[in-house]
Image (tube, rainbow, N blue to C red):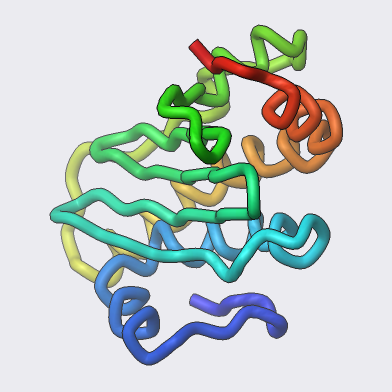
Amino acid sequence: MILRDDITLSKKHRNSFRVFPYFFRPVLNHFYFLKDDYGFLKPKLDTWKNEGVVEFRSKDIRILVEYMSPNWIGVCFQKINIPERIYEHRLFEVLDIPYDADLAKVSQSQHYQEIEKEIQEMEKAIEKPVGYLSNIIQDNCEKIFSYLRNSSSLA
């Protein structure tokens, strides 16, 4: 489980990374362009039970990449100081961005035999939808950010 060379983690996050590596590694590797290319702050990582979230925040936009077991990866967009949120499927629909919901789902086998094998399989299963969502957002950043910044409501 290797992060890109330009990504560093605090000691607290390194400990979290060991607890929940199969989600954080792909998300950090695929979504770090938000920090590198668009000036978002270093992401915040959080976990609870078998779920996790990576938060990217700029001065006016908040983006949450969420993993909710058993097989859902979601990207939530929020304009700072506006309570409404919008998830990727709705935002892409509003902006007429092509999106296949099936490609954003985590496909995983039902039963795992060993913990290490489970982690490797989960990471592989999560890598595909995270990469898919990241590519759509990266390819449409200007359109997405413009919409978010110019919206008075996301409902």
